[in-house]
Length: 148
Length: 162
Image 1: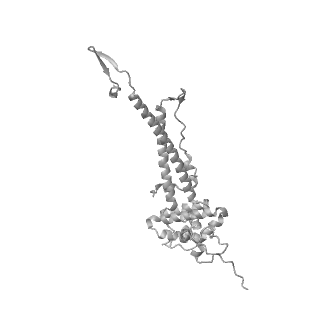
Image 2: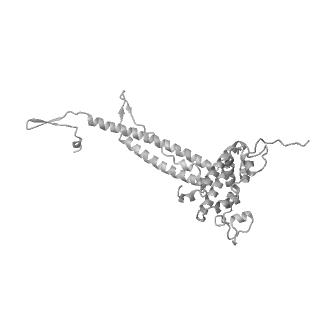
Image 3: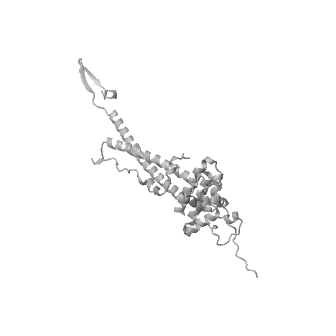
């Protein structure tokens, strides 16, 4: 038997055996943690949930039960489902913003490409350079020389 | 003559599950219809009938349907994921939000580059058409608006997202 009762056994006013399912996750120095889960789920249901899990998952299960109970006490109508709804809405808003900006980028990119194409196709009067009396027409279709 | 109590036409799902008589004033009857037995079974398994009743008593009558729906949702998620329940879903959505905000910042930076390099255009009336530069900055309050400071979610940052 634990020399110091866990928060659950203190709250339930019973002895705390050494095999108490609650004691590793509801220490006596944090009474509200068990009070919240007990108020929403009940000790029996919490015990069943923990017992049905492998031992290495029980700590995180106890944490998530505590946080869900906390949310439900703060918001009895929606609990943590309210947070999920808000997050979905916010994700949707950001996705719409992102889609709008990506559309603008696509439009500007297309404009820019069209510009480039137009500049390539514009026929500039060929340069007439006489060499050895023979005119030399330099075609400006060969863009490789533009950046020499 | 023996007075007979008015009999309900059929027991609600809660009273059927609890194997008790369903009275006309049954608290569960409006929200747990007889044709939806699994709905009550789920909330009963996770919360228990007594706790559901206490929660319903705490909320105004016009909000009880929403309350039941959210309890059913929480119970379903908890039964699917006994370790994390709805908290797992919240962590996953937060992660997605962070990724989207990152993508948004990158997209805005890319748009800014296009805008800087873009020459001005002339319309038919020789008026300058400037590209749209009114893009919104990502809201920094997206997550803060949930008042996370009052909720102990920081411990979940270490969890692997489902």
